[in-house]
Amino acid sequence: MSIILGIHSDHDASAVVFKHGRLFAAISEERLSRIKNDGGQLPESSISFVLHQHGIERREIDKIALLYSFFPEKYFYHETLGKEIERRFKRLRNFLSGKGTPYMMARDLLKRLNQKGKNFDDHFRRNKFLNSEKFHNGADVKFFDHHNAHALPAAYYSGFERCAVITMDGVGDLNINHTSSVWENDGIIKHYATDARNTSAGGFYSIITQLLGFMPLRHEGKVTGLAAYGDPSVLYEPFSRALRLSSDGKTLDSDFTGLPYEELYNFLKQVTGSHSRENIAAAVQKVLEDVVVTLVRNFLAETGMENIALNGGVFANVKLNQRIAELPEVKKIFVFPAMSDTGNSIGAILMYLKTLDPQIFNKLKQPLADVYWGPEYSSDKIEAELVKAGLSFGRKDERELVQTAASAIHSGKVVGWFQGRMEFGPRALGNRSILARPTDASINDWLNKRLERSEFMPFAPSVLEESADDIFMGVDKARHTAEFMTITFDVKPDWRDRIPAVIHIDGTARPQLVNQKANPLYHKLIKSYCEMSGIPLVLNTSFNVHEEPIVCKPQEAIKAFIEERVDCLAIGPFWLKY
Image 1 (tube, rainbow, N blue to C red):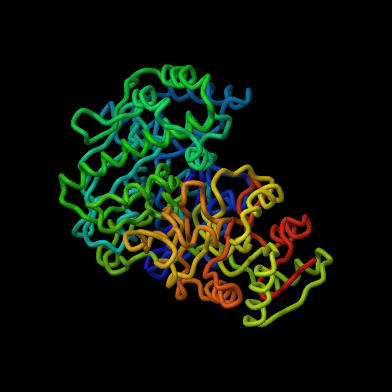
Image 2 (cartoon, helix red, strand yellow):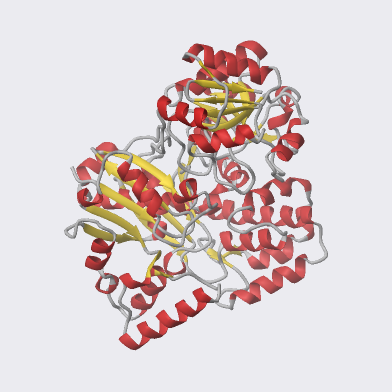
C-alpha cells in the first residue's frame, strides 16, 4: 500500500500521512512552530513530525498530495521568462521591505494559466521540488482544488450515504468561496459555486472582525460571541448590501461584485463608524445566518436531500451551524472538525486515494471516530521534562489519577489535562485541555484573566454523551458532529442555573459529547466528577494562553503550570499541584 503525504502550506499549514490503509498522523504547523495560524510556506516541522515520529523517511514517500497554495517561487515556471524574472524581483522587493514573503500563490498562477487554457502541471518544477525537499525523485505529485478538499472530507467522514455538501470560506482557488454539491455513490457532484470578488461570506465577516479591532482570520469567534449582546436591526440593511443571495437564490452576491476590495472595505468602515461593537457584531451574524440558511434551504429543496455536511472556515461559526440544524428539512448535520484550511491536507489525501484506489477509498469510508492524530509522549519523556524543570510530582495509576483530578475540579481547582495524542483541528477535545467545574459563573472572568484572554463566549462543556439529551435541546440532529464541539445547542431551562459557567447569555452552549470508545480516560474523568457533583460535564477550554497555539509538547504544559495558569497538572500518569 502506498504511503501518501498530504501538505497544506497556506494559512493554517499542516501535514498528514496516510499509511497501512489509514490516516496515520496529522498536525498543524502552529502546534510545532508555536506561531498562531502559521503558514505561507512549506510546513517543514509538520512534515518531519508526521514522518519521523512514525519511522517514515522522506525517501519512502511515493505519493504527495498538494494544494494550489503558497510554494517556494523556485518550484514554478511562469508564462514567459521575462514575466518570471519580473515577478521574482517584485516579490523579493516586497519581502525585503516587509510587505510579503518569498513564496508565491500557486493558485494565482493556476488562475492565469486557466484563463489562457494552459496546463498548471507543465509549470511545476517537479524534479526540483522532490530533490530539494529530499523526497524520492520517482514520487508522484498531484495538486488538488481548495474547495474540493473542503467538500470531500465533510461528506466522507459524515457517515451519510447521500447528503448535500456546502463549503464556504474567505476565498479558494479561482476566487471560489462557496460550493453547493451532492454526495452520492461515493462521489461529489458540484451544482453551484460562487466565484466573484467581494461576494464572500468569510471575507465579509473577516472585514467586520478587523473593523471591530480584532484580528481577522483568527478572532471571528469573538464576534460571534459578542453578537448576542447587540441589536442586529440597526445595521441589517446596509450589511445586506455587502452579502446577499443571487437572484436565483443559489449562490452569493453583493452590491460590490467585481469592484475593488477597497470599495467594500471603505463602505463597511463608513457605515459602522458610529455604532456600538455589540450592534455591529449582531448585524453581521444575523446577515450571515439569514443568507447562508436560505441558500442551504433552497439547495435542500432542489435536491431533496435531508442530511447535510459542511466544511470551510465559515462553518467554524457554531451559531450558524445551529441555525442550519434547526431547519425542519434537515434530518442530520455534520461539520468536518478541522474546518479551517488546515484540514485541506486531509482533503487532498482523500482525493488522491480516490483516484489511486477507489476500492480502498470506499472500504475505509466510515463516520469519523476521533481526531486524536497528533503527537503522543511516553511516560519516560514526560518524567524527564518534569525532572529537568525541577518540579515535585507523584506518579499515579489510572484510577487514582482520574479520582484525584475529578476531586480537584470538584473542589474548585483548575486542572491542566495533558494526555495521549494531540487533537487535530481548532478544538481541545480532552487531550490538551484546561478543566474546571461548570457551576461557578464567576470563573469566566478570573480564568480569562489568568489565561490573558478576552472572550465573549463562555467556556465550553465536555459532557458525557449519554447525558446530552437531558441537558441540551436538538441533540439528535447533530449528535455525531457535537463530539467535535462544532455546534451550539439551546440548554434546557432546568439546567441553566446549574451550569452557568458554560452557558452564553442567549441560553446556548457549545458542548463536546464525550464518547467512551473515542476517549475512555476523559470519559472516566467526567464520570468520576459526576459521581461527586451530580453534574455530568466539566468546563473545558483549550490548554493555551491567549494568542498562543494549544500546547503540544510536555514542556509547554509544564511551563503553563510553572506560570500558575493552572492549579494542578495531570500530565501522562503524573500529578502536580501547588
